[in-house]
Image 1 (cartoon, helix red, strand yellow):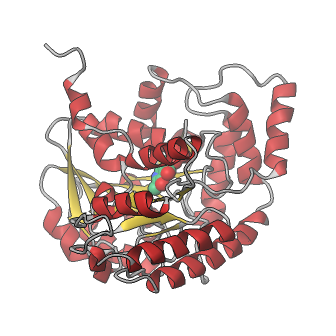
Image 2 (image 1 turned 120 degrees about the horizontal axis):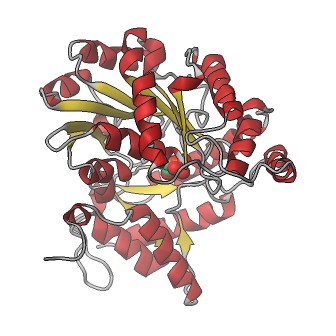
Length: 400
Ligand SMILES: Cc1ncc(COP(=O)(O)O)c(C=O)c1O
């Protein structure tokens, strides 16, 4: 009998965290390495949010709170959903967790049984299939290739739904591709879901505010109110507010689901940090002038990276609408040979070659369920990005 539970054999450590750790390890050993694996903004948390946390500590808000969020934070979240998404949620329809990841984890853990299926458009955020597998359920990946804009087509969704389908996970703008759904595209997906009343939607709106070129963000419960009763609208402060380390995420959905999530959380982590919750109130209720400022910088970086990668031999890089990732194809590098005589068989070999030859750490597309691609996070300085892309161009040119 193995000491470790069988369910552990179904999952692997997060590959994006692994790449970041590998880059840090090589750097510590003295190698000149550029890490483009991390999924977090390189800006500091805005000062008014930091100050709200300090003020909360000084007021003595350092104790347990209600398990799934303080009344003040739930109010601020209700106001945010109304103001930004036109969605009406009451406080008993709101859950707050330790990052968006916990909200997602809790929702799936609270609803999935063995044999249930969850539809996950691929490429996907690495954690979705593993969390589904941890819940003894079955992740069903639906291919969304580059020529579909990396987006789920309604007919492919329809074909993937079975009587066992419990959830569809949507993520827009997407990690890893940056692709984002327009309101019309969401409406077409909703039309399919209306035919299948047993399917719920978990929409991961974590990158809502990170959109470019005037793209208009939309979320599914807003564009199709008939899905409101079976949608969990998940969001958080990690990305837009540069608060990845504070660990606050939240969701809005039907009260019975929210209550089940609270029960689960009461027997696992209890409340998220009281101090972070106070900071999140300030984030959601305060000024947002830093968002367009950050986005202008992200957009410039995106344009630089897309332009430089499209000049690299064997690469093709579409221009995404949002988030801070690009997901170029390295199809033109597959089958070629490195100067060391190794044949590049797949995107895993390609990213290994980039790291070994030029010290650029990126994540292979296989980790996100669509190959041959790789993900670059451009949440780092323009100089570093220029250097990294020059190295990638050099590595690609050296392949025979
Ligand atoms: C698509 C997506 N959803 C959820 C999360 C988790 O966010 P948090 O840090 O709030 O747990 C991430 C973080 O990388 C993400 O990229």
